Structure formats: structure tokens, C-alpha cells
Amino acid sequence: MSDYKRWYQLQSNNYMKSLDEIKDLKEENDMLKDIITDIGFELSDEQLEHVIGGMSEAKWETYMTDLINEHRYLKA
Image 1: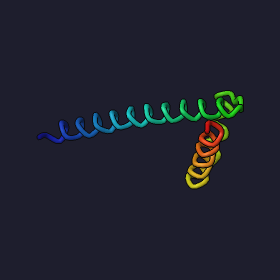
Image 2 (image 1 turned 180 degrees about the horizontal axis):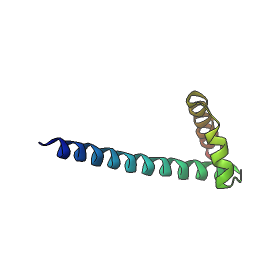
Image 3 (image 1 turned 180 degrees about the vertical axis):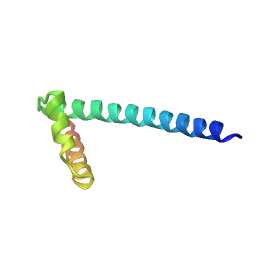
Image 4 (image 1 turned 90 degrees about the horizontal axis):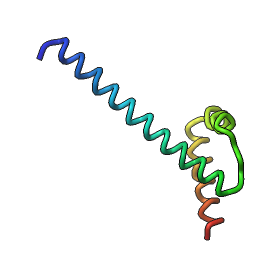
């Protein structure tokens, strides 16, 4: 395979991975908004982005776990 074809294939693969990651993030964001709405919080997209954007990964995982557990507890 020529260098150009290899480069093009790598770029195409990276682009498709990026699209998949964006789709996954959108689904996760929609799920989080649904959970927050069910719990009773009303956050705008901008507020939600501010909350999520300011967290470290460890803090984010803890936050999500706590939020999901609280959601399950309230549904039970």
C-alpha cells in the first residue's frame, strides 16, 4: 500500500472513531440530562456543560455513580 493510501486510511479511521466518540458522548449527555430531570433538577445545556466540564475524571466518575445510585434509590 502506498504511503498516501496508508495515511488516508489512518485519517479515515481516526475520523470514524471521532464520530463514534461524539455519538457516545451525546448519548451519555442525554442519559445524564434524563436522570437529572427525573431527580428534579432543571439544568440548562450550558449549566450542565459547566458542571461536567469542571470535573476531573475521578470526580466525574464519583459524581455519575452517586447520581445514578440516587436515581435508582428514588425509583425504588
